[in-house]
Image (tube, rainbow, N blue to C red; front, side):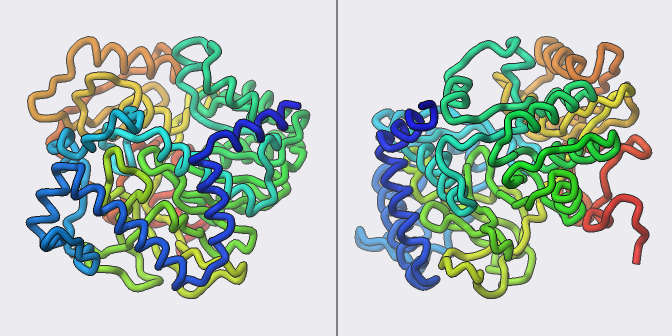
Length: 468
């Protein structure tokens, strides 16, 4: 009955239901036909932005994208990239004059550069990119609405508010989703999570890549048998080969990579063929560019630049999202015309540890410093665990921003909640936090010997393997 009611609710959500029907039908078109649909949707977005968003009206005029009242789509690539400083500086002018009618809501994100950001998003656009696209991805793997799912995900509500009921909790119950808090990874809880996994019999286990890996590794080290779910979906981090191999060995099923973000939602996922991640081209335009902003050839790594096609409330056009990756050479044998990402290589988040063996995912601090804090003075951050009881916060403050006692106290309280009351916090205010020599940014880094994850040069190899 629960699954039937949930499917009925999905069909009544007209924007998402219509989008799903369209994507389900048109995913099988040729690559050229898919590009044509994408260009048509891009043209609609650009026309709307020109007439309703002050920032883009000025920009299109300056760059010659609008000429005599008509849009010149061939000049799209001349538009400068949108980044976080630009969004902050032009926030009001980036919001549509019809935002209220689109039921605009605030969304907070950190992206992949440790820089907190607030964006406005429309209700229907979120239902499409956050709901319909994921539903399509699930269908590729035979998953139906209401199928049981265990989600190893971050839950600030459970930590900060005692796990009280919410609309999100009701939606999870109705949709058959059982959430296991990734922010509470103690040995006792991990045993309970595995027991729940074995008794709930989910069709899908989904979670942060680092937490799925640590849960699998814990089960293997403790010799706990795991009843295989239907499949594993890894999100919020790069699914390196050794992570995938460990998950598949322990969970006894295939693991698939999913790519998304808080500000852009679901963008790409592997199909059962496993030849790369299909981009949701009907909702997102993803470009891969080099350091000079030029398009990278397929097979060459570059920066991801993304345009959300359904988002009219606060259009993010050519948004420099902060991730890096490579487009695949060739098509997928599954027959879909959706382009493929060969790999996403821009994200790395270390887990933190307590002496008792409790695991705290780095995502906890992304949520705390970028999403949870209100009136946030932090423009960029990096958290380094130098010892079990020693944490260093490297912070870049906004112009005029100060780390006042209230903010400092809240960070300390929320950190000690997961790492223990004896944890010592050191705050370091810096002018900038550069990326690693590889070009990747680490928002969290664990430096405890034997606990840290592979370095940038080692991350393609299993821990303990030697250099070639």
